[in-house]
Image (cartoon, rainbow, N blue to C red; front, side):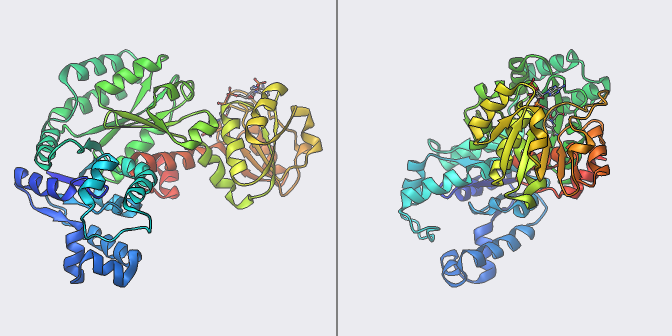
Length: 461
Ligand code: NAP
């Protein structure tokens, strides 16, 4: 048994952790205690003498040096903010996030001698830190448990049962397997999934993730995420939910107690009606491509826009044109506005461009207006050039050396537009780059770990 308890102060990590270790008959390690022992000073004294930075450096060393054998490990609340700590903590371990409501936390820690992290009052500090840390806590955990109305003993017993039995039921697992077998996914994938589902009887805390889309048979996310989970030694399996009905996918996801979903066409809008919380980017773009389930709640995120923003980050303040006015164009407009670019949306159906332009503070026009703009950056968010289509949305004479042309279409790897852009002396960015960056952000949201871009590039092949 190898389990990490994390969460905000006052959620009961240390007390429940100590009891759990006794129940499991394994050693208990508290990273704060290890830091104090190594420093020969209390956390309070370290904060006073070395500041939070000094404390975090010591905490990081303590986490990197934790023994690999069985144990219950409790970490300080801020530890999982650092993706490198999460990487160390997660390897071969199950991470349980302990939650509690703000007033319970306040009651539990009001007499604590631990240093405050801000100059706010206690209640305001709890609220602000919980709001700012919620998403990183969620990302770093396999399971979430609310400890507000439970004693430390009840929490420890609950975690012991969770580790021994997991959450899924035999009937739900059978139902899920039936759904996968009839979904049209490749036989070898269905067989591998069946093996993983059966493995739940010996490995009940194996977590499932997957892509929800229709079609999703050609998505490269399953092999990529499987390799990432395996590389980082995370007890998880990533599969494919290929079904035209999102409600059926969500039913199967519940049966398998799925931890996270990548969401793709045609469900990026529909999924928003099934979320308990969503981040500000989903709300602004009007689409969600990443869902995390924790403690019975569904949390939605959008990482698509990061896939467009990050490769263009050095071009802040440029003049840009986006071709198209659909979902990808919305993510592009949002990303480019975040880079303070002046953006014009050009679309076949001008009314759609106008509506989108109004939402994001952009100019708009028809595709014929391109020649009058002379942009620094062009983003193609139409499907023109995709696979059997040999067309390009722009001619070579539309482009000029020095322009950056980003084609979001990623099949084929070199689209007609990318070919034309290269021959015109432009910097060409392919749709694969968007996929890689959004997948990296999605893996971070799924696990709290930062996978290097080069690793994702290599794993995608
Ligand atoms: P969408 O919502 O269906 O929007 C498609 C847009 O393209 C619409 O504005 C449409 O114009 C325009 N369009 C379609 N066919 C056209 C044509 N023959 N000539 C000119 N304009 C045309 O699709 P989406 O979800 O935004 O996706 C668009 C493309 O982005 C996809 O095909 C995909 O290749 C790419 N994408 C890439 C990634 C990645 O990770 N690299 C992620 C998402 C999407 P009307 O309004 O006039 O119909």
